[in-house]
Image 1: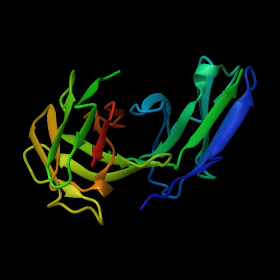
Image 2: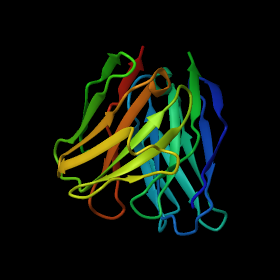
Image 3: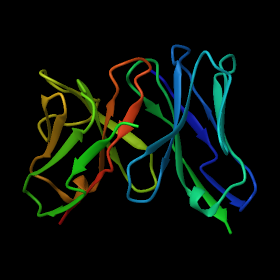
Length: 110
Length: 116
């Protein structure tokens, strides 16, 4: 089955700096890669996603890149703000089942 | 985006009792729903796939007799934790994918279960 690895597990950045979270996957059949933000005590919320026919997608301060050959994808957050502090999960999906990374706890220091 | 609700948001029960958690898709129909369990500071662990009108599919190591799943309609799936024990205390989250490729998945807000 699919195996998704995520790094780093924790990340602290100063407000205004950029944050990058990286994930790798193993199943070449995976064709959909969403990113979720989870705040304490809440369910994950979809923040951005990318499909395998696209190399990069951007939504305001958030961008995701995908390298199908290397089987890795990354989340980029620019101009970080304190409200960006949360746990971020990547996922890979070869169909309608999702395989999640282990999560990255992001802290933005004011 | 689509909305998925869960009820209750938190519940405390005594050891040996059963607890039912509801998951509803509010503005779309879901023939499939997923149930996850999440321990503190850990990732989501898929427990089972709930299928409308048929039996749920359980992941390896998940006791189907302990975690009963019923998907009675296209908008409702329930998870019943039977004979709960303190080790069942956890955060339970459901999700529902849209019924179209690439099956964007929407999560409920989660249910915090504490067994005393």
